[in-house]
Amino acid sequence: MFLNWIWDILFYFGFYKRAKLMIVGLDNAGKSTMLSLLKHGKLVQHSPTARPVSEEMTLGGITFTAYDLGGHEMARRLWKDYMPAMNAVVFIVDASDKIRISEAKTQLKGILESDLPIDVPVVILGNKTDKPGCHGRVELLENLEIQEDVQKYGENNQQGRQCQLFMTSMLYRQGYGDAFRWLAAQL
Ligand SMILES: Nc1nc2c(ncn2[C@@H]2O[C@H](COP(=O)(O)OP(=O)(O)OP(=O)(O)O)[C@@H](O)[C@H]2O)c(=O)[nH]1
Ligand SMILES: [Mg+2]
Image: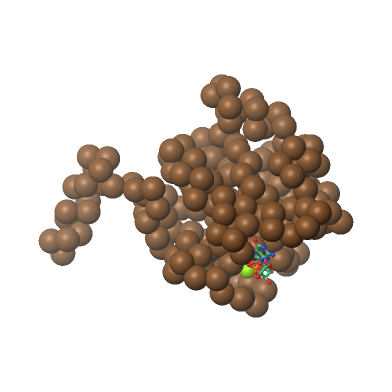
């Protein structure tokens, strides 16, 4: 009880922030792998996510409740139900999957152009950069057709949704730290 009051007071004066985060992207992109890395610091093999999984963790001074929503077609139907309550979105793309890049583009556009509140930042992770022949950052910007979203909102600091692309490898534990630091700075 006493501890709860302390948290409430810290929260009220802005010393303690909470945020709800949804982690989405096509199936097999690496969502659950990233969540285990963030939460437990371990690489874990997961079965395809059948129903939403949530984890709480503190990163960059913010306590996140993160929802791993699963990326196969049935699971995608749930994304829109979560959107109104979210403070941030992580969209993971398998940068080595050149066949499904246009499917990823469609799903990402669906989020960027949805009713997701305009003040909700979206960070896009181009994952699996350890795999040979995968898309680089410039190719990914082009193929996902997000150059404008990233430039307009991410770099020039104009009004609109904050949106940025980071390249990551969960296998080599690279890139997601920068992505989460950027995300925390937007909240
Ligand atoms: N090479 C490589 N493999 C990765 C990386 N990240 C994830 N994987 C592998 O990709 C596969 C799918 O990862 P998951 O984290 O289960 O994918 P998911 O996005 O949660 O997929 P769904 O639950 O089906 O939506 C697993 O075999 C992971 O080990 C990475 O950075 N590099
Ligand atoms: Mg999963």
